[in-house]
Length: 196
Image (cartoon, rainbow, N blue to C red; front, side):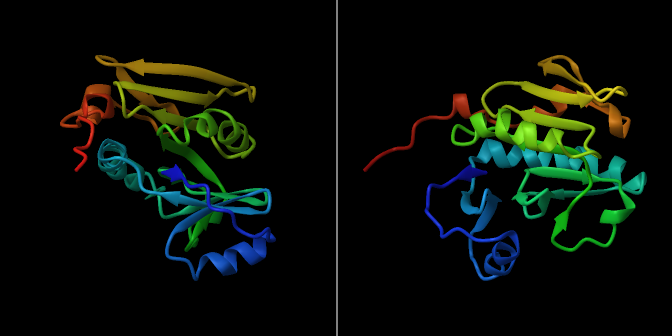
């Protein structure tokens, strides 16, 4: 998703949740402000769908839930829409609009959100006690980065490139990274749009 710079009045988290129900766009909520989110590129969407299709059978067979970008994650008094989220926590089993106890969060990078995904969101997501892995997927080249929580609570950074085996240890899942990127035209290979 791409953040749009559209000023909104400051509101409480409760006001935001009520207000958001009446909106056509999706909004993230950070520090009292609603931030409009726009759609990404075809590669962005294709990568999220590819991961969903590969992960869903494995995740569901283990009793966990997996959702795409229409489900919010609550981080204290903030609400984010990750591209993909997996929860295995019983406290999220009956959730209808948001998860509070995610195990894995995936963000497909975009030019408008990359610095936030690598900075502010990384710190926010790492503060969630149940989160075990935070995944960043590049739509420009075959690279997936994983921040993985170790047993002692520290975070380890791992990157996977073309030809390697991608792993989500917390889910016991693995596949060739090339399988994730199969049939996807990366953004860096896309032609510039034709202007009339």
